[in-house]
Length: 343
Ligand code: KG4
Ligand code: ZN
Image (cartoon, rainbow, N blue to C red; front, side, top):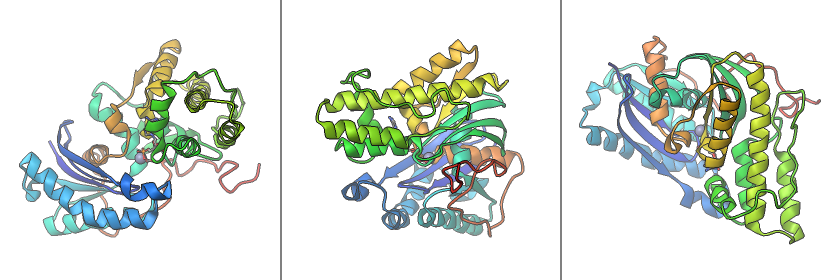
């Protein structure tokens, strides 16, 4: 049994956790920075990085105390090394390196996306490789075949906005503030998902990818028209995203032999998203796994678990490991139009 001390700081959540290789979370803590960023309607990178400097050390002390573990008892330090806002990544990774150096323990430099990708295995011991993963977060919207630790094949990505980014922008247009996802979900529960006709970009397209920019523009027009209740716009927007998820994921499932569909990332905390994808998996005769909501949004338990999986596979990193703003899970994936490539 290995004991991993984990740090997460890639966006606006500071987090620490103590996780074991036999799936116990001995302690974990997440401190969001919503109040600090709210006046700006989105995450301000420098404010986030400065907040991580102030918050992270206390969280490390807190999880060790809560679990009644001495720092010297941990087997490895796992820290997010990217992708994300580079200032925050540098703060957390450097803190991890300092701990590894001082304690004489190995460092595991974790890809934040691998944290999301493996998170379902922390709570679902029966979930074996391979599985088809819909990873929908604030920065990403991808379909990946997860073949093993460190072994990913990207089947689809977004050609413009990420799904969580679309939720955040819709929320801003509706005056709901940041972060948008939970606020849109709550308002949508009071609205009619069929009330506002909104586009479903790339629905039925032979190309495998996602697109959400046109949907955002349509939400803007619906709001400006003054013809619709905000709750109806929120519900119709959420349904449009869900329809795109289901259509694109169904296409990928039919091309994949993976026995299980998995959804992870912040947007997977959304109940309408979870239900629609569970239904899809059932229709397609596949298993289904989604982590609990607290494990979908950013946290350090998933970094600790990815760290435990990598540590078990002998994958530790030198203290010179780089902090990376961009770090795709599938380095060999083709660039798509929208990512600096013209169609
Ligand atoms: O995975 P995550 O916490 O951070 C990133 O790695 O990006 O994802 C954050 C994103 C935000 O865009 C947030 O609005 C969205 O996930 N989100 C949701 C919900 N909870 C968080 N979107 C829709 N419904 C939710 N309940
Ligand atoms: Zn994330």
